[in-house]
Every structure is written in C-alpha cells, then in structure tokens.
Image (cartoon, rainbow, N blue to C red; front, side):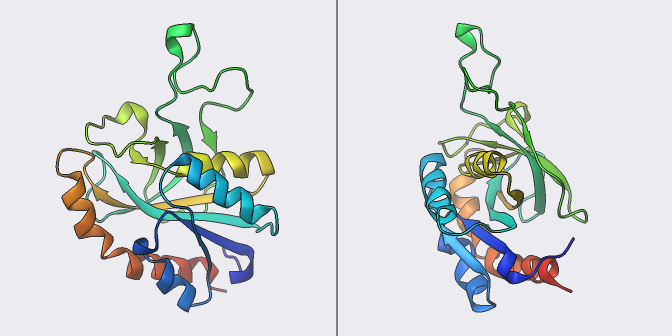
Length: 192
C-alpha cells in the first residue's frame, strides 16, 4: 500500500525519535509530547484544520517479545491502564461507551512483524504480554481519535527496551537509531 506525502500525517511524541529528519524529506510531522492526553490534544487540534488520508504514528516502544532495535508494525491497540473491573466492567474497557476494547485497523506494513500495542500513561518497567506485545504512551489515544473520525491509522514502533529495569538506559541507546530507520520506512510507504 502506497500513499503520496501530502496524504500522510506522521505523529510522533518527540522530535528525538526522528521527526526533523522526516520533515527534511517533505513529511508532514507533528509532535504530541508524552502521554495519552497530549497525544489526544495535538492530533485533535490538527484534525480541526486538516484531515489526512492516513495518520502514521512512529515512535519507540518497550517489549518483552520483540528484540531491541526491531521494527514492529501494529494494527491493534488497547488502553493498558484502563481497569474498572472491580466495578464489573471488562478489563481495558472504558465504561459507558461503545468503543471496542481492542481498536483494530487495516494493516499497512505487511513486511514487518505485527503486534498489539498497550498504551498507558506510565513508562513500563514490569511489563508482561497480557497488556499488548508492545507498550507505549500514545498509540491508543491516536488510534481512538482515528477510529472515531474514520481516518486510516497505522503505527510502527522501534523496540527500544525490554520494558524492564533497564528500560531507561536502553531507550536512550536505541532512540539514536530512530531517525534513519523511520526515514527509510516513510520512503517505502510513499514510493510510487
């Protein structure tokens, strides 16, 4: 599946993950900052003035399943820190709304391994795969907006750490590789 540059909005939490390099090759990039609230705010603000055909979330994620430095696509998303199960609601479900627990989108990157992203407002250091094979802090929020607005959504994460006690140090080491990796990925996406 290929797109033209003008149809794709790249959404990243931080410039350190490679956005300035993407801008140099003509990509439309916005930064949201960390966490679900910031992600929601900045994407919603952007969509109030322009509606892309594809929102592409690029960034880093922790994983116990995938290796550090591995590029993984995601098309399923859950809110890993939503738990109202003590009141009888299904774990990860937001009470009193019809949004599915798992938001699922059509795959865009078939050549990459695929995973579910569990999003939460914490930097995960004791992860297990019951909350997604990848963990991050923004993807679910972005996916939910795209789901509600009926915009195609894709997500690719560079595995930066094992979501364990070494996560912070490992993240800093891997994020330096992100600009080159994400530029290559973007160029493959828009290739005609």
